[in-house]
Structures are given as C-alpha cells and as structure tokens.
Amino acid sequence: MEITSIKLLSARQFRSLLCSKHFTHEALAAQLKCSDRQIRNWAKRDTDIHISYFFALAEVFQVGIEELVVSVPLPEERV
Image (cartoon, rainbow, N blue to C red; front, side, top):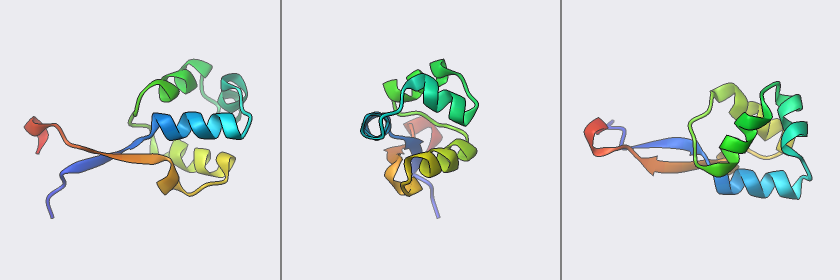
C-alpha cells in the first residue's frame, strides 16, 4: 500500500471547537500541559502534532479524532 497523504490537525476545525467549547488559548494550554503559544500555532495552520495531543484534544472537546484531522497530499519529493 502506497501512502500518498498524511493526516494533520485541522486549524479550521480546531479554531471552531475552541470557540464553540468556550476555551481560551491559555485555559486549553493549561489543561494539555503545553504552552499557549503552541495552541496559537495550532490555530493558525494545519499542523502535525504528537499523537498524544490528538487523543487529549478529542477528550477535552468530546469529539472523535476524525473530527480534528484533515488529510493532505504528501509533497512530490516524498511520494
């Protein structure tokens, strides 16, 4: 099986959940034990995060992991 895409944290979905669940960057950072700068970076662009954060975010937001991800094609030089 050839891998042609990767899963990243969807910045758009992350921002939407952050707003709808009424979290501040600082409050979520404290809950996840990471920096608020890291939370701001996640909200800016689709990004590759550690798998443990996917599970933590899914639990905090009470959603499935599939609701947090976006699939993007691998760059040509990596295919």
